[in-house]
Length: 291
Length: 295
Image 1: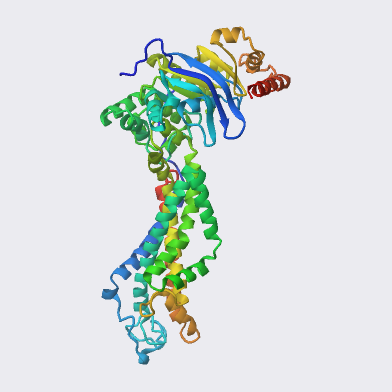
Image 2: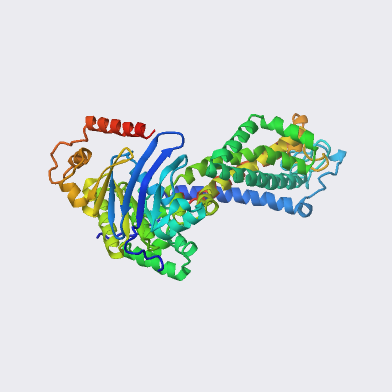
């Protein structure tokens, strides 16, 4: 009988792997920076983010003529330090991203797993619910929800979780459906495993990379939704700085001081991008087929 | 082990088994067959004849929406339909194994090989972790996998199709089952590997004395591996006989056509002789008339 040996590890172009790793590390580094800024805000912010000083209004960022030392990214039309406001804004952005995305992920993934695995009436109920949910335009839905729930951090988080669980439910259901028809599920069944044990021990590990990628992506979405709600002045009370609120204020004075708009936009963009890239990178790391 | 059957009790006894799509067409029509301890019974028929369905019904993994509508399945004197689902699962896990058709999807891609072999031993059959580990290594070695330790720690995608099928054979034999359902275990493999896998199953079967229900569409495989044959057409048993007798003197016209349709490697330039359409049409008609008679 011919011998059967183990071939070497999956070969793939090294350059691609390295590029993927670079992407993963860059996005992780940026998010770590934002997280550190959020946690250490009182220690590292050069100024009080709420302190107004009309003598210092609309100072341009460093390197432009008229810049004041100590105001790295300039000031807004009320003389508040843009960098300090960005740093404090990271607190709300990250809190919303973590809590809201996790809540949406837990609810949506659980329902998606159950629907995809058990099928039948469970699947019908969940799928119809998702259909109905997705018929609402999400931005209007969130504005409506916050209007009903009242403004504040908790309502923003609740609104995002209530709206975005469908993203998880839909994708996780489809993936679970595919996995639960695989022969290894039959094998586990013949081996005597109960349905719940199969769902948790055999199917979930194969759906997990998708869930992780979605979770990271959803964190980016949550940051955007929070910014949108702040932009229409429906998020947190106006005395805690948020990126969305800064964008709204910056828009008003774009002709006099573009940096007030540009700074939060760039930070928002980088953060959302980092979350989605992190998701892709993690999915690749988690998935043994892509390793 | 306490599960030694009395000599008289068949390992598997299927009687009048009917399976149908819920509210739809019948897939199996009152199929009866018996597998004695140590016997290898081949189950032949064309695609769609329902041969895999029998194995799935026995193992309790009928696809969603397909149900057993009549008949009984006895595994070592235990009537499966009298058991509640958890007890049934437990019984099947203790007695029967599957060697699946497609080795590419039959192993969980995100779990290491080792756990996929030992799980059942440890969790369902109460083996110690060390014993299960040793048993898995011993069997991987037996199915000619070099470096079994490394394979135990590997993920399925690191193995070739042939190796995965060896792993699945090892996993099937590991719990010392009384019955193995081999569901076209060589169909998804290339021809050179097919022969090795077939030899391997036959050797392990002979060593362990495990009864095997061998599902195949290949009369050549039937001749090599089985002692008895059941021929299936459209969910109905056409003929049943010891293998030698059936191949030498097939009594049913469908069996004769199946045998004639098998390409002979010794005569590579012979034209293929598929089962004649008229015969297939006539048999379908007969089956339909029988169905009508039932109602």
